[in-house]
Length: 300
Image: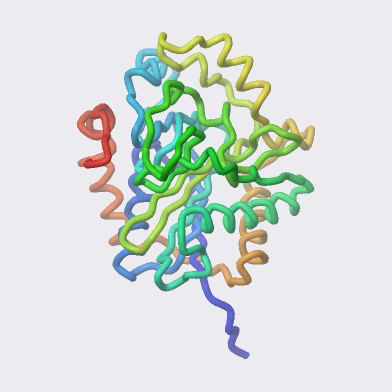
């Protein structure tokens, strides 16, 4: 008997460096835009650990490159907005789809954030982790052109400069992000263009060997930032009081997304064309100083 459930592609791409991870996310987005890829839930790891900065952040004002190099940590700019994230001892999810072909994923930024948040909460239940999403507030609605929602005070839907924009992602909670007992567990960012979106997010498994505040630029008060990060964020090991392997999180995410969206996950490899596109993006974009160091604006 044929299933009438919609199919999504499910991929675990293992551990790659920061530049390839970001390049592959963009490559999958491009193929979704061309109508050549099913909605794709991709899960991945980072090796070596990486720091990703938001699309609009200034790299020099955000991280200390010498400290990152000493700790063997890659630094890369995302195509999504938001704030700096250290990717170590975590699993990252990435969901990419056409909203024209799959309107049930949300007709606007907020709807898509909300629906993915519910799927993430459903996934966490499988791990016996019970969280909640951050409820929207009318006065916190700043959205940038990459589709990322930032915790900024704004009176209209436009990009606003944030004097604290170099702070870590996990110090603040934005709408629809996942918290457990009031502490942030999953931070996400989204980009929408050409009737498609990509949303990716960081799910910390446990504490890493390096603390993000130690990698920030001198413009940041590192000790104060470390205290705030400890007080406002959490990880699965801290919640469950045991080591959590990425394999069980992969299984939970697959189950949770299937249940919430009522779809069938089909394991399909990346196509040779997707890999080739990602490799080209890695070399010609994500490894370049032009991409990582140039200050991005609404016109870039």
